[in-house]
Image (cartoon, rainbow, N blue to C red; front, side):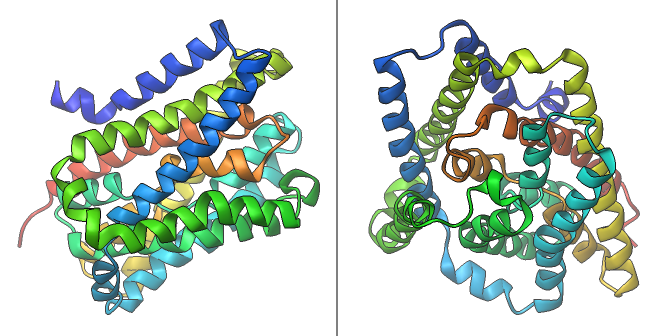
Length: 322
């Protein structure tokens, strides 16, 4: 049962349930305004909680291992976007334009925190370095992901960096995150004692954002353009991107002479993408677009990375301890 829970993320089932709810009961009329207001509050709350959980001292301590951190950073914010551009160019019109945008957007997101550390621990890797890498990735990603979105995606898709988009990013992401960092010394211990409640708020906020995005997609009729076969195609493309990154980070870490423990950290932290940060950011960066289709590659990639990395972690863990 534990192995099944590792492979099939229970939260994915909740996401599927939320999507089903949005399909059956999408928000209409005045409900749309209420949903938009709730999403704005939810996104701000999410990044406030991220700020309260990120310990600056853990980041500074881990930065001493600059070669490892540099390789993970390069994988997350340089290698991934390059692969994304090449893959989207190669597939041409194989997928809908909004899904192609979603593939590019996936590739500019920061790494995950919880699963990167968990898989590194299972594989007997360098856990402190993984904690630092994941923390730095999310800290930098708050600023760098919007910048890369504007750089990598077409101007018409990302909306450019208008004054309004900058204001939205500042008010809904940067300001709450900074407020969380300031409040951390005062409320951090309290939140640490109630991790489960905070986790429910965290995940519940994301479910609310997903409902609003897919509800808007249903009302606009965007899902009528998506055939069941398209889901399979997107999943295959996600797996190809993931495989390319895992192979590249593995070969690079070995070529550069990293220890096996450091290699594990580089592979797991450098190959992940954060759905927790990606979906809320998408509602801001792609306002006016079919957000439900844009985040679809990310949602499929999230489950794919869990399957692949769970298998890889067990293989690493089984190695000889010479």
